[in-house]
Image (tube, rainbow, N blue to C red):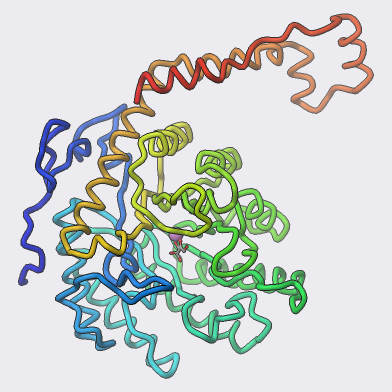
Length: 435
Ligand code: XUL
Ligand code: CO
């Protein structure tokens, strides 16, 4: 196989290294808290950004140099992209990847022809995974790029479009299963509305739930054991996306009896668009027992766009890894860099710089989060803050067995409660000791 990148495999050289093509923090086999970094972090690269991202934006054409890509929608070109991608994964020491059906294979004029094109590429991916020891973190179907999905896929007002989407999801699920995918993601890019004036929201949500129930049925039929993920995002491209944040997803899943079949795949820039921190979104999901996987990126503060930047902020990566460690680590999930290089980072080597920066930031975040947990002062403070609940009455309330009258009697007997400081600034300083 010919080489497309004149770059050696990236190695760990330690924090003092000045080699731009070396890891400074990510040392795959180094053990942190009983597991190697590789096992903790489960990095994935997304086919759509890494291989198909052209750098085009609403104001200008693509900028990325991709000498291997002839720009055609031929199968040859699709297979060559797979070669390039696997060389990249190997050289960056990334064990997992993710795809949309339409990133890896071209759409043809009819559904059977598109399925056949996808099968050809998936057959090749299967052999490449085997030869290179790589795994599919998750697959997904793109129900948002083609003009037919302009008004939604599983929430389209048009049954014909809905059926088309069903055909695509059925096939993408089959392919994910064939590739031993660890999970399968639903991101409802256009599952929402542009305006309520022309929208029957109740009908669209009912249709979305029916669609997902059919996907669950199909998953059982083919024996796909991995979880389904919903990826929340509040808007863009829609004005309002139904899966707007973790809490909205939880409500939807509970309302429609889908909780046991789904986890969430949470993305940083989607959290910030929803007006939340990433840590908030992760905590909401983890507390409900459905934090599945992470789309690891970042956005520009105060910019209302999903800029999908590589995550390099240590405060962010530490808080993410704190939540991941707190829930006991990933099972099927991982850290998928749903991130793209800036438009002016147009050379192939920039792909490496971007992934190295993200991987190093998460390796450091892992160590920081682990050290904070080992230190114990933060968790101890939080536990103490709720100490009054470790009493007979506290336990009674928590078990749902107390009454307002009983609490009133307690309040009268106790008098004005003694308050304790929340010590936010002290704790922020404490966290900085580790960063
Ligand atoms: C879009 C986005 C998607 C999903 C998969 O904002 O994050 O790439 O991750 O469809
Ligand atoms: Co994403």
